[in-house]
Length: 341
Image (cartoon, rainbow, N blue to C red; front, side):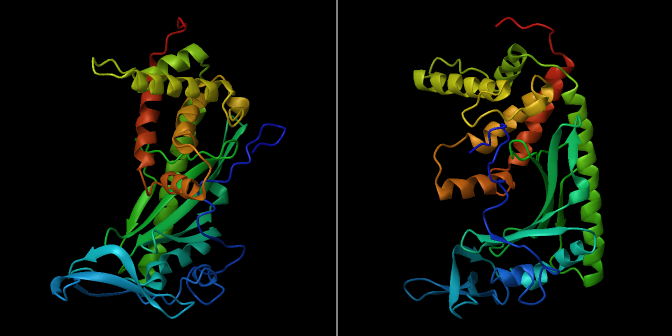
């Protein structure tokens, strides 16, 4: 999994869940567009009244279907029931917004369809938004565009940073900036261009705030003892009378794993790089466990689950990581010089 120099060769958690796009000048126009290359044009999403197994027609409940452009077969989105106010939005309409991103320097990476086509989206690299903490710890910026066909949401665009040395996602919520915007499906073409500008402006502000926080944390030395104290404050030892030995053992193993990541002795190798022994390394150890160690095994299904979690689609990890960041900042503000181990 790792090169001899210790740099991680993990696949970026955002990649590998869809069709990689080597070259495109549009998200939606023509077979050479991002959607065209992934057979995601011409789905003709429709709703139709739900009929139960006894033939009863529900007047206010509908199922959602789409065409498979490769076979011409109409497929039903499983376990999707919508109301009369639901209005199907085609992929082409949803992602007209994304076409404007190309004019502002977005680089196409991939498009994806998962949960049986209920959720679709794409990712774009934003080269000028990358950060390099302390001059040694590089993170690249990725813009994710996501919509649904199950009535659960509008078009969402959000930014995430991928730390190159370990590929964990720095998609945390910070106090003074947001990394997400919600865009109306019914926007006009002019409004879409405006939204593209607003989205990238949002992304730039969020990345700058993350960089400001990270540059502060990388300047704070942190020992293993200090990190262990911080980690046990964030994940307290179970102390209930009903606590089982198994729960205590799981907690102990979790703390030991976190310490090993912080020290550069994790099962997957050293992913601290030149930021080792700092509060920034401490925060990254805590987030890396969320991205790469919460589950075990190496199945394709697990890889896709991790990718979805990293994008904030499943598990809302951006909020979890934001809470951890706040706790790390709070601990650093009052960090003791020495900790008895």
